[in-house]
Amino acid sequence: MKELKHINKYFYKYKYRLLLGVVITICAKVFALFTPRLIGKSITTISKGLNNEISNDIFKQELATNIMYLIGAAVVAGIFTFLMRQTIINVSRYIEYDLKNEVYQQYQRLSLNFYKSNRTGDLMNRISEDVTKVRMYTGPAIMYTFNMITLFIVALIYMLSVAPKLTLYTMLPLPFLSFIIYKLSKVINKRSTIVQQYLSNLSAYTQESFSGISIIKAYGIEDENNLAFNKLSEDSKQKQIDLTKVQALFFPSMILLIGISNILVAYIGGVQYINGEIQDIGTIAEFLIYVNMLTWPVATVGWVTNLVQQAEASQKRINEFLKQEPEIKNNTIEQSKIEGNIEFKDVTFIYPDTNIKALDSVSFSLEKGETLAILGKTGSGKSTILDLIGRLYDVQGGRITIDGKTIDQVNLTNLRDSIGYVPQDAFLFSDTIENNIMFGKEDATEAEVIEAAKNAYVHKNIKKFTNGYKTKLGERGITLSGGQKQRISIARALIKAPNIMLFDDCLSAVDTETEEKILNSLKKVSHGKTTIIVSHRVSAAKHADKIIVLDDGKIVQNGTHEHLINLDGYYKELYLKQLSTKEL
Image 1 (tube, rainbow, N blue to C red):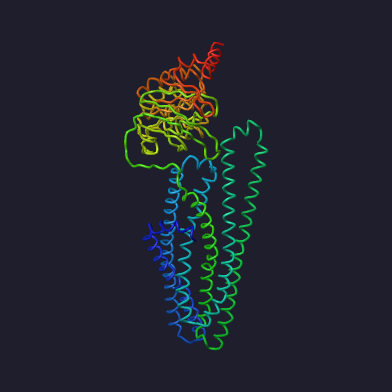
Image 2 (tube, rainbow, N blue to C red):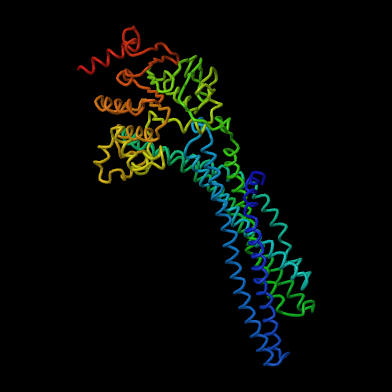
């Protein structure tokens, strides 16, 4: 139960609701336990009437009174049972809501490297399936536990007061039941953990297949994909069956032991009645009803234990992520405006997951309002520079300063609020085009959205859609072309009006004519803002104030366009190659 201690704070949060639920549960069970007593009295009355021990009038009066009390007790018990479920089960839904929010907020806190180490399907399974398992512990498990305890205490006290010896025989099978539950619970806990792990693998594989469905179809590997999925499904099914086999032992064992209790009550009670130890025949009927009333609570011991074990296994998986600390932390609460002065001083960075050295002693500086273009071969470290400016990673060597402060001493929220970032792989949400652009500024007006789209040279394309800016996009913007996705992504960054603008090869999917128009537009809107453009095209770099060329994580060339085209090297070769291609 140590993993489930994490939930205790939510129990404390909703303690008054839970206490009310406990009181209602006690009331419901007390009134429910009137039923056996009244039935027992009624049977005794009938027996006396048949044996002419009481007059006919008294017989009718007592029987009618018992029936009225019986109906009244059943109605009141039913009302309290309804209120009990409304109180305790509702608390479990509140806790589920809070726990999902806690997990989601933790996901948001964790650094980018966390997402490189964990699959999306597994993350989704923990916030959905695992949290649902925990909810079953915080609601039904607790409710039926209170039910069982209340019923046992009230019933046992009364049964002992009426027939102590018969009560002891009735309860005789329970220690054996407890032993069986203890043994099976350990196995269930272990197998539940395995089942959840297999479900995570299945979810992850399914999510990746759906995300990459176009690749699967393009390569014609549907059959191979189906075979792999079927194997995962078969493995998961087998683990579920292994768990179910153990769970299936609970109810037959309990029904057997309850049946033995019924036989003992009928036999021992009958012997005691014959010997005169029990005065009323109704007592035997009453005890039989008590035993059968206790059948469900005793049966739920196994079910509740099963729920607790599954919740324990699931909460352990949730805690694995909740206990992780983000690698990138906000080290200061000081709020200050970011002007946009950036300096890299002998910066070295190695990706922790692959151990690849992306940057090696890189140094450059940018004043507010200047534009820097970064060129180089694939894998030379261009995108890494942008990631470091947004502090998605921390450097292992050297220093990055923003407005004269080392980047780790700049308020992280301020820093990222001051950056407009357009990634190489444009990501759009399954929402309207308007909302995708407004993602950069949630309170933007319609005029601002249109202006941003015009500056990104995508307004005319949007107007051609049937619903214009209200057009709903498919997952990851699949309904748009690559160029359209990139330009909407640019509009999302521009609407934010940041002081630092980072463009990571975001014009690779547009033609050179469109690129030229977008670059001219960006030149106007980026006036006075620090801008960094990563590109493979000289046309995107030629108007920059500074240009650096990276190779294997090192700066091999730097200067202006006019300076670099007159020097032998990568930039001049690229320029001449792209110039000849353009002429062709």
